[in-house]
Length: 176
Image 1 (tube, rainbow, N blue to C red):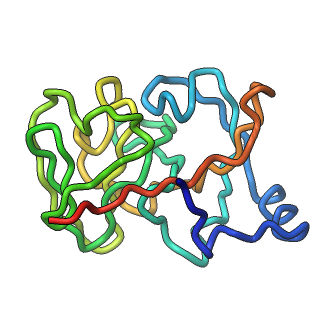
Image 2: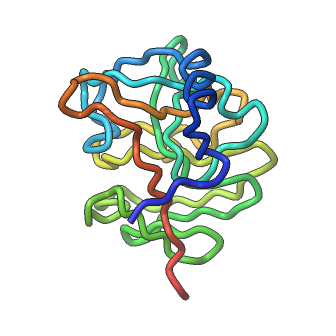
């Protein structure tokens, strides 16, 4: 079951209107976030989402790609400032605890894609695509500075059959 954190719950008419006026349309161009977001789908990015708050683990964000001038990407927030993140034997660990990722649909965090580890500094995030086998993300370009994050992807409006607010489905820390 997915939850919506208090910081993202303003479902009042004014909250939705504010979000709509501070959102920008975005066309999904690649497969890195499949099945959450598919190529050709269109979504809204709330560019004011992180003015008064910070990205949370599990948020889907739009960002200025660190490795490609002028390109924008969509990825999921996995690691937060001050954390240690490691990818070992196909599993993802944050501060030594395995991360359960329900949005991967039962797939492992990494399918033979090597091992890596990061210690995140102030304002640094690990951003990964849900479709790990077909995603260029923090595994390639390292931690992403908060200044590169454009906003939170919150509403898919095209195609109509998949219209809706994107589920906030945070990864869970498994017990050691």
